[in-house]
Length: 371
Ligand SMILES: [Zn+2]
Image (cartoon, rainbow, N blue to C red; front, side):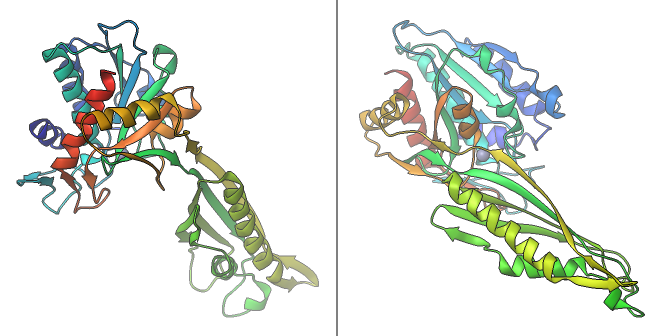
């Protein structure tokens, strides 16, 4: 497993550029007896390959089919990764991410299929989805050909600790507020202008940002005005995201932000040629993904917890602050949970894989396939 993940992280696969890693994985799955195809998600999202969908026939028709899934893409900087092997970990050399997110998940799945086959273990049909473009909005999962899948339960391998089974995750909204002010010469007649930058600044200063409440977070990442310094700016764009485990809280946060922009705009006026002018706000709010909340007594949760127990690992259900393909699968008719693989410090150049956790994850997944 360590060799396999070491190999996979050295194959560049930024989002939309997953082809090389797919070309390595598809034949590997075929060698393990899987029927493999690539769906048309790549063409739909502008990536160089689609999702890999594979099926390994089970030897126990009485067992329900199970989907195992991980994503093939990584965040930047992920080109030319040079993994460093140490006794208890694999880490990046500090110049790039490692890509254990989510190549550790891919490796666990391949290894599971290999062991099922080598040891002729009893299992139902196992389906596999290796998705593209998870990191840029779960696009592969959103376009995955779910009709081609028989499984109604899935284990997604895309989170940090193997002792946590993530069953709850937030909804996420992307927001963009455009403040429209009024341009005027900044030196000659600034009183005839309305600074969109100042309105945006007042709105941001007023709105809740960061940890809004126990279930809700909000983040502003782009504030963009621009133009020559001698013109009062008439446009400023503010971009960010909000997440919550509770959709009502998410709506409340959106309403609070909207109110701050509307109040800041209403306070910014100018009189030009006897006519009163005001700033106005254009807003765009898009749901990036929907929250998930799988109950503890759901069959897939019970199956994973029992599997972990059978191999002496302690696993507890938990909530996570980030979305994954599991959010999408849950909305598309496949009840899904997200088990940790040992990935650590993800999305940073200090990323590493905890090997003990990595192996514990594989033990649990293998056991879940055989029960
Ligand atoms: Zn991931």
